[in-house]
Image 1 (tube, helix red, strand yellow):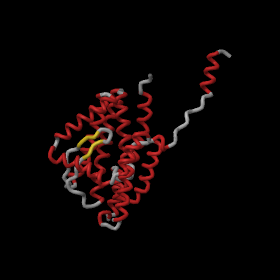
Image 2 (cartoon, helix red, strand yellow):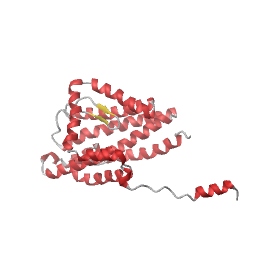
Image 3 (spheres, rainbow, N blue to C red):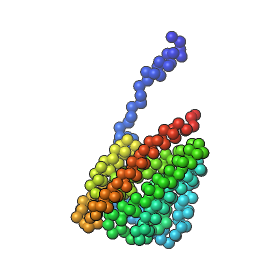
Image 4 (cartoon, rainbow, N blue to C red):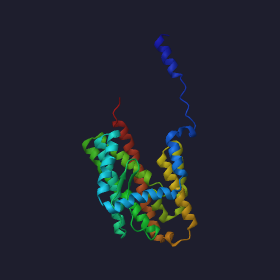
Length: 279
Protein backbone atom coordinates (compact mmCIF):
# COMPACT_ATOMS: atom_id res chain seq x y z
CA UNK A 1 0.00 0.00 0.00
CA UNK A 2 1.47 3.33 -1.02
CA UNK A 3 1.41 6.57 0.89
CA UNK A 4 -1.62 7.95 -1.02
CA UNK A 5 -3.70 4.87 -0.21
CA UNK A 6 -2.81 5.21 3.48
CA UNK A 7 -3.91 8.85 3.49
CA UNK A 8 -7.19 7.98 1.78
CA UNK A 9 -7.83 5.22 4.29
CA UNK A 10 -7.21 7.61 7.18
CA UNK A 11 -9.62 10.12 5.69
CA UNK A 12 -12.27 7.45 5.23
CA UNK A 13 -11.91 6.37 8.85
CA UNK A 14 -12.09 9.88 10.24
CA UNK A 15 -15.08 10.07 12.56
CA UNK A 16 -17.70 12.71 11.75
CA UNK A 17 -17.47 15.91 13.75
CA UNK A 18 -19.45 15.88 16.96
CA UNK A 19 -22.33 18.33 16.93
CA UNK A 20 -22.11 20.63 19.94
CA UNK A 21 -25.02 20.58 22.39
CA UNK A 22 -27.91 22.94 21.74
CA UNK A 23 -26.93 25.43 24.44
CA UNK A 24 -23.47 25.88 22.88
CA UNK A 25 -24.93 26.42 19.41
CA UNK A 26 -26.64 29.58 20.62
CA UNK A 27 -23.45 31.66 20.59
CA UNK A 28 -23.57 35.45 20.71
CA UNK A 29 -26.68 35.50 18.55
CA UNK A 30 -28.45 33.32 21.08
CA UNK A 31 -27.47 35.60 23.92
CA UNK A 32 -28.84 38.57 22.01
CA UNK A 33 -32.08 36.74 21.25
CA UNK A 34 -32.43 35.61 24.87
CA UNK A 35 -32.16 39.20 26.01
CA UNK A 36 -34.92 40.11 23.59
CA UNK A 37 -37.10 37.33 24.95
CA UNK A 38 -36.53 38.50 28.50
CA UNK A 39 -37.89 41.89 27.52
CA UNK A 40 -41.60 42.39 27.95
CA UNK A 41 -43.44 41.55 24.77
CA UNK A 42 -45.12 44.95 24.93
CA UNK A 43 -41.68 46.52 24.58
CA UNK A 44 -41.13 44.68 21.30
CA UNK A 45 -44.61 45.63 20.14
CA UNK A 46 -43.92 49.22 21.12
CA UNK A 47 -40.82 49.25 18.91
CA UNK A 48 -42.78 47.89 15.96
CA UNK A 49 -45.59 50.36 16.54
CA UNK A 50 -42.98 53.12 16.55
CA UNK A 51 -41.94 52.09 13.06
CA UNK A 52 -45.57 52.15 11.98
CA UNK A 53 -45.98 55.60 13.57
CA UNK A 54 -43.25 56.92 11.30
CA UNK A 55 -45.15 55.66 8.30
CA UNK A 56 -48.15 57.82 9.13
CA UNK A 57 -46.14 60.95 8.46
CA UNK A 58 -43.81 59.78 5.72
CA UNK A 59 -46.24 58.08 3.33
CA UNK A 60 -43.93 56.58 0.71
CA UNK A 61 -40.69 58.26 1.83
CA UNK A 62 -39.76 55.68 4.44
CA UNK A 63 -41.00 52.93 2.14
CA UNK A 64 -38.67 53.95 -0.66
CA UNK A 65 -35.68 54.53 1.58
CA UNK A 66 -36.17 51.30 3.51
CA UNK A 67 -36.63 49.37 0.27
CA UNK A 68 -33.40 50.75 -1.18
CA UNK A 69 -31.55 50.10 2.07
CA UNK A 70 -32.84 46.52 2.18
CA UNK A 71 -31.79 45.94 -1.43
CA UNK A 72 -28.35 47.27 -0.54
CA UNK A 73 -27.98 44.90 2.41
CA UNK A 74 -29.09 41.83 0.43
CA UNK A 75 -26.96 42.87 -2.56
CA UNK A 76 -23.90 42.84 -0.31
CA UNK A 77 -24.46 39.16 0.48
CA UNK A 78 -26.26 37.74 -2.56
CA UNK A 79 -25.75 40.11 -5.48
CA UNK A 80 -27.72 43.06 -6.83
CA UNK A 81 -30.18 41.27 -9.14
CA UNK A 82 -31.08 38.63 -6.58
CA UNK A 83 -31.62 41.37 -3.99
CA UNK A 84 -33.90 43.35 -6.33
CA UNK A 85 -35.96 40.25 -7.15
CA UNK A 86 -36.26 39.20 -3.53
CA UNK A 87 -37.33 42.64 -2.28
CA UNK A 88 -39.83 42.79 -5.15
CA UNK A 89 -41.39 39.53 -3.92
CA UNK A 90 -41.63 40.97 -0.41
CA UNK A 91 -43.22 44.16 -1.76
CA UNK A 92 -45.85 42.21 -3.69
CA UNK A 93 -46.59 40.15 -0.58
CA UNK A 94 -47.20 43.32 1.43
CA UNK A 95 -49.24 44.80 -1.40
CA UNK A 96 -51.50 41.75 -1.11
CA UNK A 97 -52.14 42.60 2.55
CA UNK A 98 -52.88 46.20 1.59
CA UNK A 99 -55.38 45.22 -1.13
CA UNK A 100 -57.17 42.78 1.20
CA UNK A 101 -57.29 45.35 4.01
CA UNK A 102 -58.75 48.04 1.79
CA UNK A 103 -61.38 45.62 0.50
CA UNK A 104 -62.40 45.18 4.14
CA UNK A 105 -62.44 48.97 4.62
CA UNK A 106 -59.44 48.81 6.96
CA UNK A 107 -57.05 51.75 6.34
CA UNK A 108 -53.38 50.84 6.20
CA UNK A 109 -50.07 52.60 5.66
CA UNK A 110 -47.37 51.93 3.09
CA UNK A 111 -44.89 49.20 4.11
CA UNK A 112 -41.50 49.70 5.70
CA UNK A 113 -38.78 47.17 4.84
CA UNK A 114 -36.43 45.71 7.44
CA UNK A 115 -33.47 43.57 6.27
CA UNK A 116 -33.73 39.90 7.30
CA UNK A 117 -37.14 40.54 8.88
CA UNK A 118 -39.24 41.34 5.82
CA UNK A 119 -41.62 44.29 5.83
CA UNK A 120 -44.40 45.74 7.95
CA UNK A 121 -47.55 47.66 7.13
CA UNK A 122 -49.41 49.76 9.66
CA UNK A 123 -53.08 48.98 10.29
CA UNK A 124 -54.79 52.17 11.44
CA UNK A 125 -57.94 50.39 12.66
CA UNK A 126 -57.89 46.93 14.17
CA UNK A 127 -60.22 44.33 12.54
CA UNK A 128 -63.51 43.77 14.31
CA UNK A 129 -63.30 39.98 14.19
CA UNK A 130 -61.01 37.05 13.39
CA UNK A 131 -62.68 36.56 10.00
CA UNK A 132 -61.63 40.03 8.81
CA UNK A 133 -58.14 39.49 10.21
CA UNK A 134 -57.84 36.20 8.31
CA UNK A 135 -58.82 37.80 5.01
CA UNK A 136 -56.17 40.50 5.42
CA UNK A 137 -53.61 37.86 6.39
CA UNK A 138 -54.51 35.67 3.40
CA UNK A 139 -53.89 38.44 0.87
CA UNK A 140 -50.14 38.51 1.50
CA UNK A 141 -49.30 34.83 0.88
CA UNK A 142 -51.73 34.71 -2.05
CA UNK A 143 -50.13 37.64 -3.87
CA UNK A 144 -46.66 36.40 -2.89
CA UNK A 145 -47.35 32.94 -4.30
CA UNK A 146 -48.73 34.33 -7.58
CA UNK A 147 -45.66 36.57 -7.96
CA UNK A 148 -43.37 33.60 -7.29
CA UNK A 149 -45.19 31.54 -9.92
CA UNK A 150 -44.44 34.34 -12.40
CA UNK A 151 -40.74 34.16 -11.45
CA UNK A 152 -40.89 30.38 -11.81
CA UNK A 153 -42.38 30.53 -15.30
CA UNK A 154 -39.83 33.16 -16.35
CA UNK A 155 -37.06 30.90 -15.03
CA UNK A 156 -38.22 28.06 -17.30
CA UNK A 157 -38.53 30.35 -20.32
CA UNK A 158 -35.16 32.02 -19.80
CA UNK A 159 -33.34 29.01 -18.30
CA UNK A 160 -32.18 31.34 -15.53
CA UNK A 161 -30.56 29.88 -12.38
CA UNK A 162 -31.09 33.25 -10.69
CA UNK A 163 -34.84 33.17 -11.26
CA UNK A 164 -35.03 29.52 -10.14
CA UNK A 165 -33.25 30.52 -6.94
CA UNK A 166 -35.71 33.37 -6.38
CA UNK A 167 -38.64 31.07 -7.11
CA UNK A 168 -37.48 28.54 -4.54
CA UNK A 169 -36.92 31.29 -1.97
CA UNK A 170 -40.36 32.77 -2.64
CA UNK A 171 -42.14 29.42 -2.33
CA UNK A 172 -40.22 28.48 0.80
CA UNK A 173 -40.95 31.78 2.56
CA UNK A 174 -44.62 31.50 1.63
CA UNK A 175 -44.69 27.98 3.06
CA UNK A 176 -42.94 29.10 6.24
CA UNK A 177 -45.25 32.07 6.61
CA UNK A 178 -48.26 29.73 6.44
CA UNK A 179 -47.26 27.84 9.58
CA UNK A 180 -50.36 28.05 11.82
CA UNK A 181 -48.82 30.16 14.55
CA UNK A 182 -49.67 33.82 15.02
CA UNK A 183 -48.08 36.37 14.35
CA UNK A 184 -47.31 34.52 11.10
CA UNK A 185 -49.95 34.92 8.41
CA UNK A 186 -50.80 31.23 8.67
CA UNK A 187 -51.63 31.65 12.34
CA UNK A 188 -53.90 34.62 11.69
CA UNK A 189 -55.68 32.69 8.93
CA UNK A 190 -56.04 29.56 11.04
CA UNK A 191 -57.35 31.70 13.91
CA UNK A 192 -60.59 32.20 11.99
CA UNK A 193 -61.02 28.43 11.73
CA UNK A 194 -60.01 27.72 15.33
CA UNK A 195 -57.25 29.30 17.42
CA UNK A 196 -56.64 25.86 18.89
CA UNK A 197 -54.84 25.03 15.64
CA UNK A 198 -52.04 27.19 17.03
CA UNK A 199 -51.22 24.22 19.27
CA UNK A 200 -49.86 22.58 16.10
CA UNK A 201 -47.94 25.60 14.85
CA UNK A 202 -46.20 26.55 18.11
CA UNK A 203 -44.42 23.18 18.57
CA UNK A 204 -43.50 23.28 14.88
CA UNK A 205 -41.75 26.62 15.37
CA UNK A 206 -39.98 25.13 18.38
CA UNK A 207 -38.86 22.15 16.28
CA UNK A 208 -37.48 24.45 13.59
CA UNK A 209 -35.65 26.40 16.27
CA UNK A 210 -34.08 23.20 17.60
CA UNK A 211 -32.67 22.18 14.22
CA UNK A 212 -31.84 25.66 12.93
CA UNK A 213 -31.28 28.27 15.61
CA UNK A 214 -32.32 31.79 14.67
CA UNK A 215 -33.04 34.86 16.81
CA UNK A 216 -35.95 35.60 14.46
CA UNK A 217 -37.47 32.19 15.21
CA UNK A 218 -37.18 32.92 18.92
CA UNK A 219 -39.11 36.17 18.47
CA UNK A 220 -41.77 34.40 16.40
CA UNK A 221 -42.09 31.63 18.99
CA UNK A 222 -42.34 34.14 21.81
CA UNK A 223 -44.97 36.12 19.91
CA UNK A 224 -46.94 32.94 19.12
CA UNK A 225 -47.00 31.88 22.77
CA UNK A 226 -48.08 35.37 23.81
CA UNK A 227 -50.89 35.42 21.25
CA UNK A 228 -52.07 31.95 22.28
CA UNK A 229 -52.11 32.95 25.93
CA UNK A 230 -54.04 36.11 25.09
CA UNK A 231 -56.59 34.02 23.21
CA UNK A 232 -56.99 31.65 26.15
CA UNK A 233 -57.75 34.55 28.47
CA UNK A 234 -60.36 35.90 26.03
CA UNK A 235 -61.49 32.65 24.43
CA UNK A 236 -65.16 33.51 24.95
CA UNK A 237 -64.92 36.88 23.19
CA UNK A 238 -67.10 37.54 20.17
CA UNK A 239 -63.93 38.30 18.20
CA UNK A 240 -63.39 34.57 17.59
CA UNK A 241 -67.07 33.77 16.93
CA UNK A 242 -66.80 33.00 13.21
CA UNK A 243 -69.62 31.74 11.03
CA UNK A 244 -69.27 28.02 10.23
CA UNK A 245 -69.60 28.54 6.47
CA UNK A 246 -66.77 31.09 6.53
CA UNK A 247 -64.65 28.71 8.57
CA UNK A 248 -65.10 26.06 5.90
CA UNK A 249 -64.22 28.45 3.08
CA UNK A 250 -61.16 30.00 4.69
CA UNK A 251 -60.01 26.61 5.94
CA UNK A 252 -60.18 25.10 2.45
CA UNK A 253 -58.44 28.14 0.94
CA UNK A 254 -55.72 27.93 3.60
CA UNK A 255 -55.07 24.23 3.03
CA UNK A 256 -55.01 24.72 -0.76
CA UNK A 257 -52.43 27.50 -0.48
CA UNK A 258 -50.38 25.49 2.01
CA UNK A 259 -50.39 22.35 -0.15
CA UNK A 260 -49.54 24.23 -3.34
CA UNK A 261 -46.69 26.10 -1.64
CA UNK A 262 -45.28 22.84 -0.27
CA UNK A 263 -45.36 21.06 -3.64
CA UNK A 264 -43.77 23.97 -5.49
CA UNK A 265 -41.11 24.41 -2.79
CA UNK A 266 -40.19 20.73 -3.14
CA UNK A 267 -40.07 20.94 -6.94
CA UNK A 268 -37.96 24.09 -7.20
CA UNK A 269 -35.54 22.90 -4.51
CA UNK A 270 -34.11 20.20 -6.74
CA UNK A 271 -34.03 22.46 -9.80
CA UNK A 272 -32.23 25.24 -7.93
CA UNK A 273 -29.74 22.74 -6.46
CA UNK A 274 -29.01 21.22 -9.90
CA UNK A 275 -28.35 24.66 -11.39
CA UNK A 276 -26.23 25.96 -8.51
CA UNK A 277 -22.67 26.73 -9.63
CA UNK A 278 -20.11 24.21 -8.33
CA UNK A 279 -16.67 25.33 -7.20
